[in-house]
Length: 560
Ligand SMILES: CC(=O)SCCNC(=O)CCNC(=O)[C@H](O)C(C)(C)COP(=O)(O)OP(=O)(O)OC[C@H]1O[C@@H](n2cnc3c(N)ncnc32)[C@H](O)[C@@H]1OP(=O)(O)O
Ligand SMILES: CC(C)C(=O)C(=O)O
Image 1: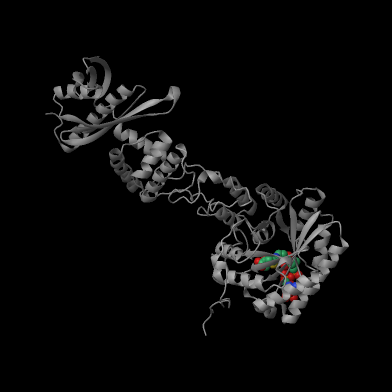
Image 2: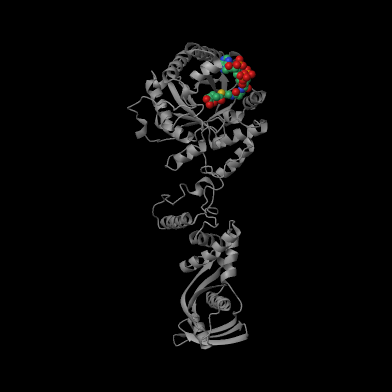
């Protein structure tokens, strides 16, 4: 016999949940201020609790478990302030947890005195391990514990008719309790409370510790829902934890299996590996086109506020919100994102489909309050797609394809040499340093005339040996300049040229890319100027300067 054993599976051959789909948002209940709080190194003080409560309200939570008032004076006082200070919006219901212990239940009702509406959440352990090891009770004793304390809760509710009460019961460690026993206890609780379709009780089925694959939880939930005598007198709630790292899957399959409600926390804080993360669950609905009924349109400030209140960081890879989750460093991802974004923009501009179908980005960052700035970041794993994306997006420089291929080698060399991320500013600087040379050849002035369908240029150029007067003719200013330079003995030709403008209005500037063949080899140059023609001529001289430098380095004859 080994140290660990396999988990049991559920005998449910005609399970229905695998063919189901989640069609609408469940009832969300935040347990940040209770389960989340009880697992913190430093539980929240009043100020942090307030901030968290207000955050939850602003996101649209309608049910909020605000604490365990019989356990701590901070929780008790917080509840009193909420109630006495009338700080609870009309559509929000407070929930509090109490164990099945009479003095603690009485204290819980003291804390709730005067509340307009409240959910009293009673729990006791029901699983065999807990019955034997913790409580020292058999099945009957355990059921009696639940029933007697349910009766007490019912009586106390009746004694305080000014509050609109809801009762919630949790058979703790539902996932390791024998299913027939969970059902037996829960039916007894429903009967004792007098539950009916008009007076529904929340039955919360916790995966207190996640011990099996998510399909087993779904089977347990479906089995439970199908075996309830009157399903309509219960709201089935799930309370998944994340010990195996599959809390989200368990919650989703559990909803497919018939649950109505989810208890969880923002970004998954909670005991051990945490409670299920409601933000991820809700966003998973959102990206299926389902209204999550929570406002998640600006998640970064929400994350920062939660980090402050919990004094715990949210992981940079956390779904939908982590600092790095909208960022691609790797070249092939960047290339696909760049093309996908361009195609999405084109589709929107032409009145085509608004459907978000961008590779590697399951959600539009704008929908959660992020922007496209960090979508592509460059390091040694990156390629031309990402580099040209940054130059275009941040600096208005749309590189021609062949130049993008060439320039990516320049950036790759820097990335390999430094072993660090290369920021957009560094890429811009490297680009200008590499391609916009104004030495040794620099345009000083030029005169251009059009005659008989031809362009004539007379240019003054500064060169390594002093001033150079160049005149030539061609079908445009660039070809005229190149002919003039050829006349001076330079072995050059135009392969290609592109230009576009960057910036707008008074700040607009032309950027020109000229590719020359110099001494038989292709070489790019870049020119920037408010005047497009001047930018093109500067680009040609920049290419010539680069060819000259290569000539110096490699000894290739630039002059014929
Ligand atoms: C799964 C969950 O997350 S449940 C919520 C857990 N949250 C918390 O525990 C946070 C707040 N808790 C507390 O402040 C405290 O634990 C209290 C106030 C609830 C109880 O404190 P204490 O009375 O000092 O008990 P303590 O926490 O040490 O241990 C639990 C005791 O209660 C007993 N117990 C547990 N459930 C019951 C029950 N329903 N009826 C009677 N006794 C019970 C245990 O057997 C144990 O008894 P023992 O000391 O005789 O062995
Ligand atoms: C009290 C219950 C619902 C709980 O927190 C758990 O089982 O994890």
